Amino acid sequence: QQPVQSPQAVILREGEDAVINCSSSKALYSVHWYRQKHGEAPVFLMILLKGGEQKGHDKISASFNEKKQQSSLYLTASQLSYSGTYFCGTALYSGAGSYQLTFGKGTKLSVIP
Amino acid sequence: NAGVTQTPKFRVLKTGQSMTLLCAQDMNHEYMYWYRQDPGMGLRLIHYSVGEGTTAKGEVPDGYNVSRLKKQNFLLGLESAAPSQTSVYFCASELRGLAGGNEQFFGPGTRLTVL
Image 1 (spheres, rainbow over the protein chains, first blue to last red):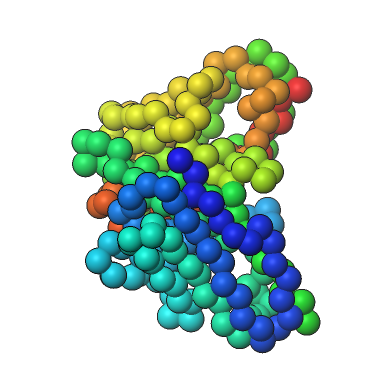
Image 2: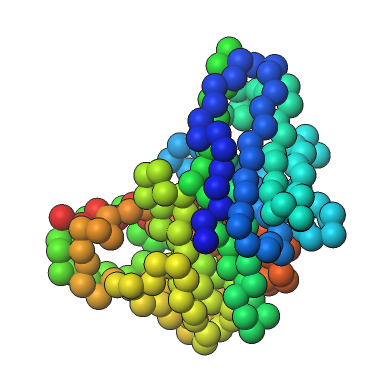
């Protein structure tokens, strides 16, 4: 089941902060965050695992509330290069030791000078 | 290392034609995936493979077939293309699917138009 992202779009001025939220109705093993610029492939940002472990970039932070099955991505002091569409992916166990990653519809972030 | 590559980058088909999209990775990854991306829909999983010789259905498998004869290659086939299959197709690979704890590396995408 596809996770729900909010907001759908946001416009920021350079230096402003933003929060992108991702929620699921199912119990999650992990939450992934990716950024995609127009016409390019998605690029990995961060993974948040059950139990609190995180893997990702130093300049981007995120949280994972396992009880609520929610994750938030925090973008601070935004730069023009932060512009793009942000996708969260929620990992659900699909049996036989494997999982499936289901992506949300994305949040389009535009940073203007 | 080239990472994940996809062939072709663009393709136009007529309804009913068939084609195969090739994905190759040189990172010795176990897991490989095929996604389609449509405007406003995000990425949807078509099929995936957890190792050489194995494949499994994802969220939207109808109208597609896949094969993974070699570890480094993952092929996506359209037997009889339909306009609804007009989309951008992304291949991705992952070292191994440890409960969703590894990043996926995406290829550059194939833009397919079915007339």
